[in-house]
Image 1 (spheres, rainbow, N blue to C red):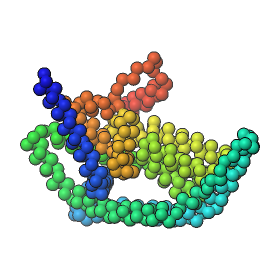
Image 2 (image 1 turned 135 degrees about the horizontal axis):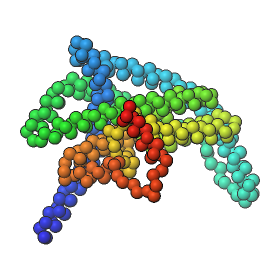
Image 3 (image 1 turned 180 degrees about the vertical axis):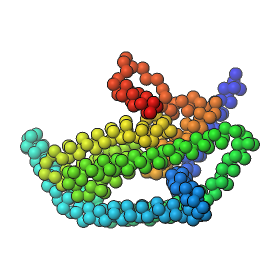
Image 4 (image 1 turned 30 degrees about the horizontal axis):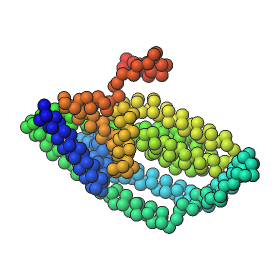
Length: 368
């Protein structure tokens, strides 16, 4: 009994030591792992294009280069458009900063009138333009240079991942034959998760950008395209990105309009878009491939952000889905896969109307 207890404690110690070592290596070698993981995900998303070109008797290397050029031209055009709007927005910052100071002073005066003359606040530099200090600009330039370096490595990774795809498939087959036939099934399921998540989130991002852009354009926001893409990109970070992006847009609308109606309307519409995206658009477009519960997603975001920053907050969600598939394939770890999943009983006194509506939509999709 004592020997068995000691073995369990020893196993737990080895597991915690391996976990700490893994986290340290992932954090220390983030410059290598982050672009590699991004490359794997992007390679899965553009594989249908390169495979279609290769099926038209175009050499594989040329098909991959054409696929990368299509994506690169699209991203360059989008980046150029966003940069031009961002430059115009930066040029308007002094005027927006002055408006911000005037409104804050007026509101503080009103608060002091309500609370009495004894309520005194020290003078604070509320200006948003003061955040653009030389130190922050230098840090931004350094971060931008590092990002551009990673952006140059990623296309190279993608090219070799797609070019040597048969090599990797044969490697997985040989490992499956020698050890466990379930490895090949796991690789196929993991590939389905990655491709489904990436292509699905791209569609969701376009839909959210379109809905946000149409609303911002309807209320005459000058930089509606910039803010629409900002909202859509930040929406890739579940639960957290929407608060950050919405706060920035609402603040801009607040500073550029003369009434409180438009900021409140912006808050209501952006929140409605978020509810629509979380409960209807994402389940219908992305599907149930990454079937991880909300608590596991939040933990994945926090852990990924602590290890790999913003990239980790996005990448750790499908990686958690792959981890769940791994647990489900190993009998001893299946309870942990169940713990990560979203198929769990919730006992309520009666079934609420929202669940009835979702069930009806699913049944109609299955019948159709």
